[in-house]
Image (tube, rainbow, N blue to C red; front, side):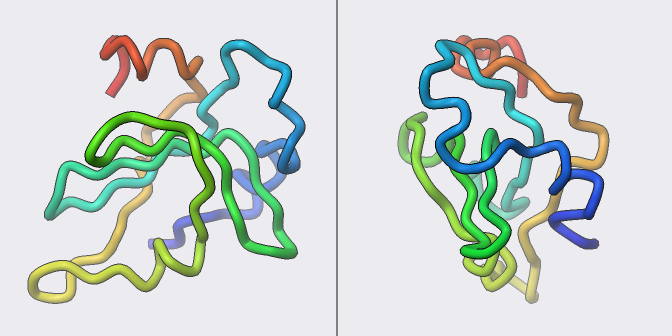
Length: 101
């Protein structure tokens, strides 16, 4: 499965574009099926292959994460990070409050 399609890439605003928004949209959702870690992308820089968004790991926080790192992660039996193909762009506040998963 391709983590970042051309369609998604076009939907994601450039890095820094949502910094003044109080509730940016999470355009894409990536998850590691062998852990509870989830990454919600709100921005993307195609040259650096770098996302910015909400990371739900040890705690929920906004930060940067790399497409290359997501593609390189491996779990048991070679499991890879997946993209939620049914994800609809969702306000970050709904993810933070637990309304969206």
